[in-house]
Length: 403
Ligand code: CS2
Ligand code: MG
Image (cartoon, rainbow, N blue to C red):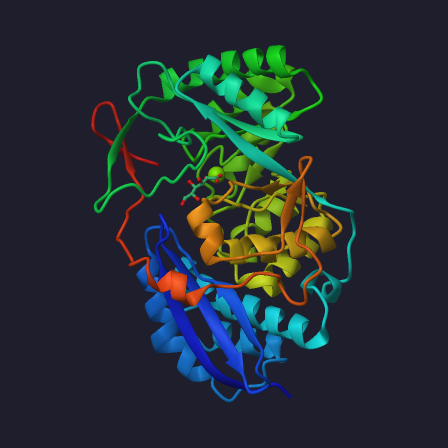
């Protein structure tokens, strides 16, 4: 059996910080896991180095579920974004090892392909509606079948999802949190015209998505959902904060617009009521933040029982290691919905060479044994960690709000 003989935490910053766990075995095979938690990277790096790695040495790398249960139950302080990202990195690396030793791509170990490719959505954003629609047309020309629309809001200096350099949206932008200003009223007025212009320009054969990013009350989300029904959104994401899962009952009472939530979820418990009561249509939890491939597969199976599909988070702050793992997962599960794909920069792709490919709006993880992604440690070492916080948000009267 492949015994774990070493494990290292690699922190690198090719334009943004990434944390990668590398687990080595006595059979000369190693596995990789993404452990990146945007804005809290060193918390996970330290949790891994101090409280996980010492417990891995000597273990059987094939015993993925047992290691998962050891790290979850053995933590005592269960769940939470830091713990579950650390567990995710170990789990993902062990699936990588298992695939390499079996000579199979991980999706084959998960039951084989349930589809030929994975539909992904790109991020069209712009300063105003015209700019955003032009970006969306560019994504349509690139072959995307699903496009997220995020536009600047008249009267607001900044808003979620609108990047400075258009394509590579990275919100962690400063050594201390940047303060943004928010107005729900200005925002709510801006979204229906955005969708009207987008449908006018792009037609109906492309899925259009939008991320509210936790910023509405349930009744406001119900109103916006109803306003947008005529434009058939593929989903409204993070319509309202989901700590109180019952919030979504209110939204459901007012609109049939599909709802997606969960990129900040770190375990099945964060989504149990939402799924059981069919309060959402897509669950966004992802490999790196929700306990790895093993736990995400359990979450997807639970969702399958309740007509809920997956729509994994895939922002630039999830590394190519997570992207690769997500594509294996997406290819295999029966209730796949869509995969977010915010392309990484060339610098990042050079640090993390990978087999996954984009073609005509779809992606495939490739058939390399394991995850089909690697880390160029020499290159990674050139990019020093650089602290970067996500922004915070205040209302126009100064009240602290949700970013
Ligand atoms: C966003 C992310 O991709 C998304 O849907 O919500 O950009 C999110 O803001 C970042 O991943 C936070 O680090
Ligand atoms: Mg989001």
